[in-house]
Amino acid sequence: MNFLYIANERPCLILHGGAGPMDPSSEGMMKASKALRKAAQDSLKSGARDMALVVRSLEHLEDNPQFNAGYGSALQADGKPRLTAAVMDGRKQSFSGVISITDVRHPSRLAWALQDNSTRVLTGPGHELLARRLNQPVENLITQKRFEAWKKKLHDEFFVSDTVGALVCENGRLYAGTSTGGRGFEDPGRVSDSATVAGNYASRFAAISATGIGEEIVDDALAARLETRVRDGLGLEGAARKCYDEALAAKRSYGWIAVDVAGNISIAYVSDAMSYLAITFDGEVLASS
View 1 (cartoon, rainbow, N blue to C red):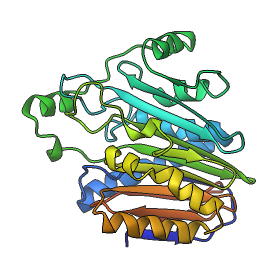
View 2: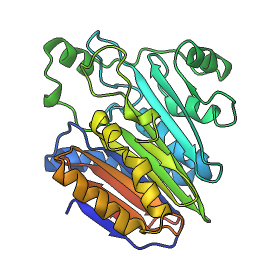
View 3: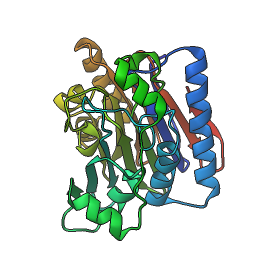
C-alpha cells in the first residue's frame, strides 16, 4: 500500500531513501531498506538526538553511493554533481540550507551549521567558505558508475534511490532534514526542491521531508501545504490523505515522510516505489519498505 498512517506516541526517527527514478525490484528495495535500517541503528547507537540525530542519519546516507545524496550523487548535464541539503528546527521554525555543492560529501552538515546565522541559505561562494571554516574535506564525489551512466545517458538502468530525508520527533520537538544530488542530466545549475519549504519543513505541529520530481513538489508547495493543514486542525492523517488524493489526481510522482508533535507518522508516495523506515529510539521498527 502506498499510504501509511501509524499511530505512535514514542520518540522516533523516520527515514526515506527516495521516491524518484529508482529500482522498484524486490532486490533493489531490499538493498535500500537494509541501508536505511543500518543508518538508523548506527545513528541511534551514537547517542545523537534532536537535530544532531537528523544530520547524523543524513550523513550515513550521504556516505552511501547507493543513494543519490553526497558521495555518488547524480551528475547534471555538464558532468558535475551539484548537491542540495536543508534542515529545519520545528521549535524555532528555523530553515537553513545549501545549494549546488560540488565537492563536499556532507551538505547536511553545512546546512545545520547555518541554523543560527543571519544568512541561512547559501550557494557559492558562501558555502565554499563555510566548508573551509568547518574543516570539511574537499573531495571528488563522482563514482565510476555515475560517470559511465552520464556518458551513456542511461541513468535509469542503475538508479536505486533518490533524495534522502530524516525526521525526528522527541519530547514534543520536531526536526527535519533532506539531502539530494538532484534529478540527473538536468540543466547545469538546476536547483532541487530540497532547499525549499516545499521539500523540507518543520514546525511545532509537523515535520515533513519530500522526495521525487522536485518541480512537482514545488508546484504543490507540498511540505508547507501538509504542515499548514495539520496546523489548521485537520490532523496528520486527514492532511496527508488530502495531499495524497490531490497528488493522485494530478498524476504526480513524489512521496513524503511526515510526523506530528504527538509522534504519529505518515508515509506516502505516488511514484513507482519509495524506500522508508520508521523506528523508535529503543529500536522497534514501526514501518519499513
